[in-house]
Amino acid sequence: MWTGTAVFDLLLGDIRSLKEKRSMVRPVVAELRRRHAVSAAETGHHDLHRRAQVAVAVVAADRAHCAEVVEACERLVAQRPELELLSARVRYFSDEDNSSDKDDSSDEDAVTVTGGSHG
Image 1: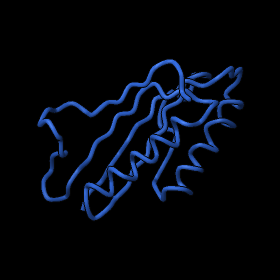
Image 2: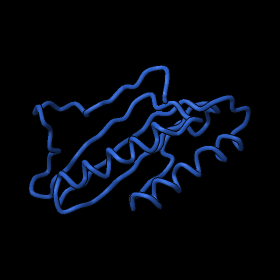
Image 3: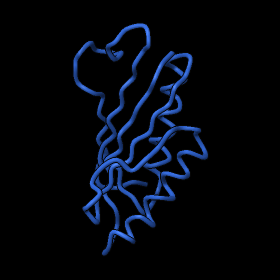
């Protein structure tokens, strides 16, 4: 059994209130859940108007399927015109050992950093 997680750091458009922020972030979380059958939530930057952190988690029989789902979630977030994906921290865990599976055996998370434009 494998677990894949991703934490997306987002920059939002011209947001003036936390209510506006919620109205932008909640549909993204709902779409991630609906389209990819993942567990998803807003997990950080709760008090900042123009920043959001959204995390997803998936459980699957193999690492390849976890990676496929996590990458699809990242594409969905990156393609949203009202958001800018600043970074994505991705990790995979196996139940066969208590450490995360790393391609390069380092202790660092895999991080994808995207630049100024999003689409």
